[in-house]
Amino acid sequence: MTTRRAFLVAFAVQLLSTGHCFLSSPCGRISQILPLTSPARTNPRSETTTLRAQRRKKSNLQIIVEGREISDQDIQSAIKTQVESAAQSEYAVAEGLQREAPDKAHAAHDAHHNYPRVLLHADRLGRDATKRILNVLPKQKALVSTTAEWKRLQRHASETISQTHLRDLLKDEERCDSMFATHDGVYYDYSRQQATSETMDLLFNLAEKQELTSRIDQMFSGEKINFTEDRAVLHTALRAPRDEAGTVFVDGLDAIKEVHEVLDQIKAFTEAFRSGQITGYTGKRMRNIVSVGIGGSYLGPEFLHEVLKTEAEGVTSSLGYSLRFLANVDPVDVERTCADLDPEETLIIVVSKTFTTAETMLNARTMRQWLWDFMGDDIDVVRKHVVACSSVSATDKVAEFGIDTENYFFRFWDWVGGRYSVCGAAGAVPISLLYGFDIFRKFLDGARSMDQHFRNAPMRENIPIIMGLLGVWNSSFMRYNSRALIPYAQALLRLPAHIQQLDMESNGKRINKFGVEIDYPVGEVDFGEPGTNSQHSFFQLIHQGQTIPVDFLGFVQSQHDLLMDNEKLSSHDELMANFFAQPDALANGKTVEEVRAEGCPEDLILHKVFDGNRPSSSLLFPQLSAYVTGQILS
Image 1: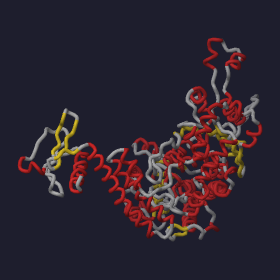
Image 2: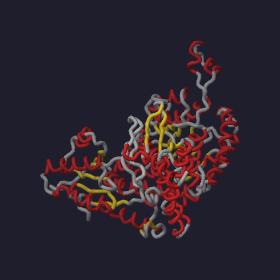
Image 3: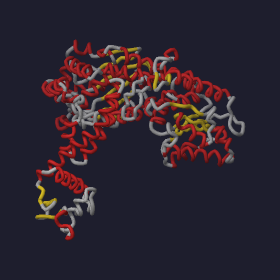
């Protein structure tokens, strides 16, 4: 086919893919093309230069260019040429950037930005085009599922673990004695996972193949590993000690120094608030705090608040104050939040990185009007009763709202994702106002402890790494699509909701960083409820229905223990008896013989049998405190 005819065919393919009628073309050689649903028409004035599309036998399409019918082979050749051309032209930009980039990291970063854009061209032409375009693009690292390490894990899962029952694995004392890890009072037992020492070896080999420890170092050092937004991922800097200032920089900014400047500002402000130095518009002392935010700006701080309100130090330090959260744009949430509050004694915190979040800003305006309705619409009402936690880039919007940006504005940064913001101003301001800054500092210290363990502990002794690898094992190899988080502490009732966001928003991806569609399951659906409540809610399904891996959290001491007269066990002992019994029951199950031995009627035996072989892990902590809560979250 001549070059000119190839161009015309390619252009025809583009037009036909839209399903619309075009009456002209840039080249002047195509005067008309009709949608497939239209009756056949021709242009009598220019018959030989007309591209005609008409129905043939109701389903077949005839394309004629310059009087000659174009075959399916011609069309496929044109599509291939289009795809290759699009790939080469789109990726030329990335190649140029790679040549100019100062190092390989910058080159890879620029390339990643262009991959999804190139693939969008292929998506318009279908899955086959996507495959062809990948062959044109400069070679990148293949999907992890193509590696030998991944294949070995797949074989191990199908040939060994699928044929093995946890009941038998738990009889192997050497295996059980090796499947634990400890750090700073935390004990992690994963012997009830469907895994052997060989499984763990294969998982560690996979982690090494993927250069996991190097990637961890990149995160801690401030490299922009969030390539889609060109940002560092530095929630760990929010809890780094002051003496590490000058060790982590983002775009020339000393991240840790910045963090401590804001923490110092929050400490001074919250202490002045709690001492009565800061008062409201009418001179009254403020004792009520309403935090307005959504997503991580709400879930993280509320989770921490629920823990501290029954913690010994928290109970004492919060006397005389109240904290409420307003997240839902539903006006009922506003009504419940404001019920029985005195506006003259209430401080509003608006938490929004951009100060444009639709739900948050509507609620913020509603709360502003609530203040004005009671105290008049003087701008000083806002300056005295509203503070903002937002990005520096939103300073103008904060000022336009009427907030005092010199004294009532607490900044955070683009290198902290919203779902991790509880360790920044979004959590520090409301929690420190209610409980005092010192207790919030203990929370940060606990998170810092686990951060250091995550970064420095050997992989085979590293609690977060082991938990992460077992998550990959259960999701991608054992094909379990859910995970239950069961804290045996009522104070952690909001932990599952916060973990849902932390985990599911982070892992909700369908392509890898090169824009290649992932061909294996990733991430789990997280859910959970506290302790014995969950046992009477959905454990029937976990024991006898779908296989759902479970993470149990327990505590040696309760925040408030209780032993009633004439009771053999304290309430906490009863709670922990369940904590220890459930993992064993899930793993071992109950056989027909065991049910019959309990005296069960024969016609009910099968209904009370459960297979077991349900995986779980257990985390044991000394006592739930601000410090331990930081460890849990980190």
